[in-house]
Length: 495
Ligand code: SF4
Image 1 (cartoon, rainbow, N blue to C red):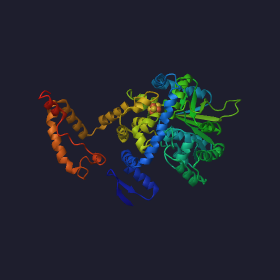
Image 2: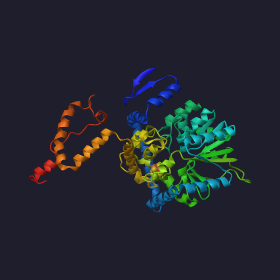
Image 3: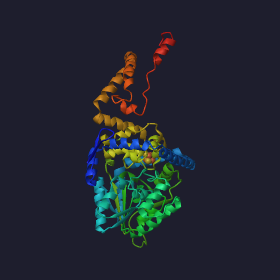
Image 4: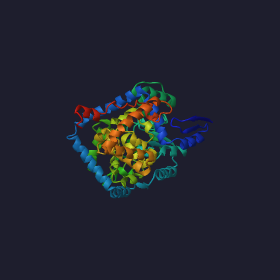
């Protein structure tokens, strides 16, 4: 056993046995300590940051071009926000209608109140069919409930069919961006992982690399016992799921295997089929700068008598997993309107610098920072609300008008209300007193200068009480004369 001190003073014990190592890392590492060490590591790689920023900028540019094809893009955003607002305000009724319609055509619907219930249900379906091989299309809800490890633990092979997901699966990594899971990888890295895991020749040709994955995938579709997908929307009035994608892999995943399981968060339900005429183009445009995503499928049940294709069995798993906790919060429930377009990540100055893995969450970027404290616990993930410049670019870009940056402030407020540090409260109370009493404020100027003088020899040293802040920044010294004093002097004493 080796011992070392972690950067934020937490003791991390490296244990050779993997199970013990996993256990101790769970015990000793907090989401905050991991976030600090991961961001420290990711931000020093300036080349990678610049490359990532250029890629994200590319999506923004494309979006700018496509926005003009909407008659009135702002009006489309307002309409989309209103549709999702209606959906969230009537969630219970819409979900019942959605489920009833699905069941009337032979779909089995599972209402899972948490991740475990969803995973248990899916495992049971797989066991009932003696499943050995599963093909999956992209579904962030399954990432959220950790479905793949549970299936693999039972000896089943799970293959991601979305190219980006497939690449990060081979690298045993989490998706970097919930729309573009492998956007952090250049061709050489993709070629290297294919070479290592699939035994292919090195290549820097994107088409060749895509063909390697495609050839392998074709066999996997035919061999799979079960196909698992997500759903971008659930349409209540027709009882259908809508899946939107660019590679055609979801279409094959949902139609070739004999059993199809769709996993979706309960907030994905929308009232009517016509709503898709606004939401689908907005989803494609906002995040990826496409007029529409290339393939759009509607699935309303298993294969019906007389139909020649489609799965024999269709299951829809409706996942709550603390979404109702967010629904119960009238101030922040609009976060459930999110259509997972990824636009807020693309414009976020924090995401552009720390990248997706540093968040340590299923959903990265501003929306991830807003909802993760609700989904996983406010105190454990409150630090994400502080990882923001509060510039509001996320709110401006959001196609369903979620008030993202104010929600970050609300999370900060709630975290302090729930378990505020006494010292923090004391400091802010004193600050408020000083700022609201001019005489006190003026008197404090001298004290501040004296404090700065006493502190300056300590700057950056071990005994520096502000070391966490000053290790990467220079604390500005107070001006020799305050603005107020200069003003008074210039005006001959008239303040
Ligand atoms: S919060 Fe808005 S911008 Fe961000 S992913 Fe969701 S819909 Fe897109």
